[in-house]
Image (cartoon, rainbow, N blue to C red; front, top):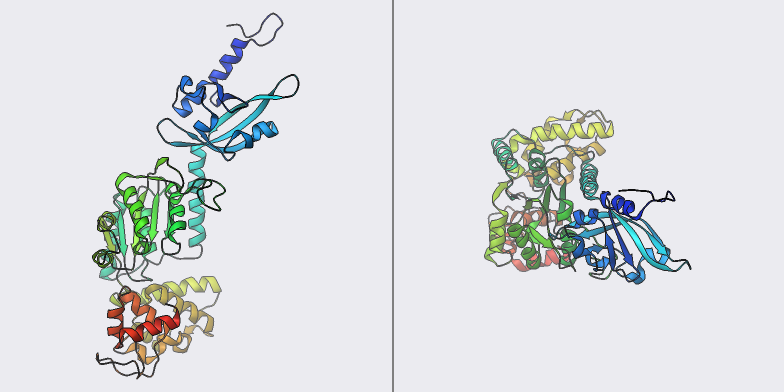
Length: 462
């Protein structure tokens, strides 16, 4: 084939060869947005043959911000540069692309069409998602040490379960009281698994209302609801190739439960406001401090979803059941806050150490860390004394037969000794956590009736 004619101009056949051998996709549209030409690159990217592409509108194969030709930057501004779009492929998947284009004009300067090029951004987008997730992970964990430590038999059993979970791809349900380290256990499982090069994305299911949680998990299409000014990728897509950690799973609504069940069964989902089915290669780890089995019995949680989530259960024991680990954790946190503050605090004195060992730790490891941080604020010497500890920890009443003492008016007939210490909001919240929100059992344990309990909850906004 000759590339040049007698006037040394490039021939039409040569241009056609160049276009067809380009790795980038090239296509030409008229002013109505109808595709009139495409090269082999677009066929490879889309999976469609040229005969299936030519004659379609560009909106039929692409998802772009403009939405229609009347808003098309190519026709209005006569050029577009580095616009991120999505290509709808024949197999139903979506390919992220970078689009560039220039308008074609006639001898009078009128726009008669446009030529556009598309570059596959799949590898770059996947790398960006992983990098973003790693940055978010680093941001969340900056200055936070690994708290999942312990020498007790209970924690050795947990470590063994974590290793087994990490060696598989099964869905994991982590249970335990508030402050026991459920997120850290999930992180350990992810980091020891074959997915450790992928992202670990966290969602707190109790922090968002149903409508926002759906969008956060599955993403949404532009215009799906008021304020949806552009397409948004959900956490399932962001976690592709990695792990999605759903914290407080016991708080999700029945509607979200259905959508989660579908993903666990079919590994597919749709964005809010979009009918396109998408897939994601995601390992699911969930956590809760609630009794999901009890929620199933009361109809608040789907039984089929419950069994899908607890394929491999891991239960974290409360700190009061692993007191052998308290000394290790105290040493660990002293080292952490010594490095952060520069204070030369080495240990606890004997009275403070005994007090810490006697306390029942309703807030578990999180409360213990807060106690050490509090002590670093108040401590003047090299040893933490009893008066450097938070008030509720050093009170004798809180180290006796009940972790949740009440005053004379509240002490009931359940064998609780009468105390002068008033019931506080923190005490009530801790007891509600212990009994997984069951008001009847909480009231019984405090020696009060449910009406009194309800009045306190209303007073403190619990």
